[in-house]
Image (tube, rainbow, N blue to C red; front, side, top):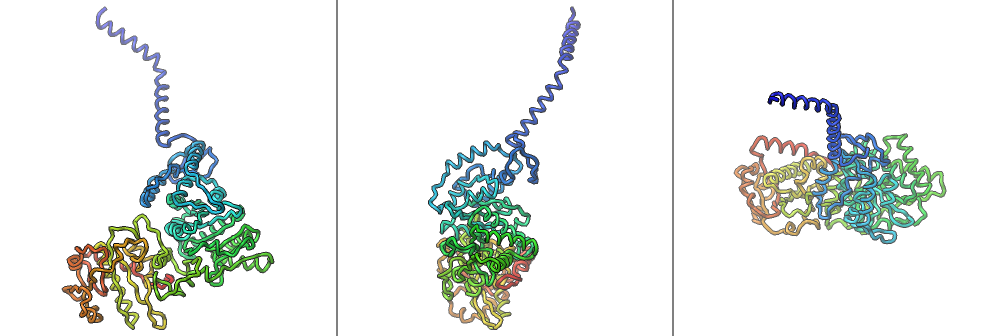
Length: 598
């Protein structure tokens, strides 16, 4: 046989074999494709259990009986490192929580085993009637609560004992910092840990729980992503949710202390509420109305009727807020029920914002002219509009201790600039003009020197022309000011705050004055005394940016002190910088009144 005949025979046999097995090729290819699909799905989702969520968090299908809340709680399956900082919490929330909804849920058996193991590792030892959790304890024990219902959340957080007391507070994303400060200042010192924050968004609860605080997402609202303007439509909707959450807790048999977040406790309020098993409810009095923002309720038929009636009033009159609803419902029941016991809390111990702040003229911490409130138990920071103004008022009176991820108080590498407004003129308009120009100069110099401004005291005048010292919120809209300069300024009483490092509190060092037409006119005596270091610009209209940098950029003092800054700065040299800064000034320095109603 020739070579060509041999090759033809081999080729013929191969063709016959391939023809017989060609029918298997489609099957093999199909199996390979199926295996590839399975591997991709497992790598993407981790397991295949029948639960899927699309990219916009819409629930599609599940063979597991729990609610969507369970999926949100799965973000906390892994324990939180005790050394995590606030900044790390924020990063983990953004990186981990934002991707959890694109994953498939782990099986219920795996979750239960992990929950049992976590509870075993972090078992808390409870005292009778009152637990004593630290934030770390709460973080460990409630890092993955998996509350399938509001009832489960209440059971987990309420006080042990027959009273079954729970403290409830509603939180949206605009009030998260307020909630953290409220816990540290008002709840933690008095071991009031039987609390449950009620969130209006998943992000709110994720943030609070990462800080070690329990939160239940009661009802998700798009408007819950930010704070709401007082008495706006969305504000009233949020207040109606407060009514629903309190009513549901009462129906489940819980004694409820409902408290807003803009309150300060100077003592344990539970020890000062005169309701020893005989009253239906006890509320803080806001002028003539009952304040729905601080109310103690026992789960009686009367208190349940009150909150059901509030819901009816809200449905009938959507523009009626919950405080008006509460007052009207109580008056109706008082007129028709002889067994209804309602307590109006002592006005000297439980004060509203008008009484404590405004009428008593409490503006700055340590003001010797104002007597301290020795009887105060609870103070409500109301009668002022916007969360920014509330926080600012808290800060000036050292009722704010939230340091935040940027170390608002405790940063040691930050540098500050301090100045005062020593002039006091009879003409309110001229005084207004000079102090505005000084504030603008201070903001510009701080921008040049990369320093943080510590605000001065301002001068305010009543309708009779009488003047007094006042704070930023009496002159400008704080929300607008924050929108442009947040993070770049501090309140006047900042340097005396207990959390501020001692290196910033020294009053030694030089005091500077930039000589201008104003200072030469009004402060000739101060200049002659030589008590301050006078810097003379080339032009009388204020120092240029190059002069400011030449004089002060090399000063390494943590606090740069100026006697005053009336007209001290001219303008920025570069047109783009000048335009940008002027826009910030125009938008940020909007005149307002003390209650921020403008």
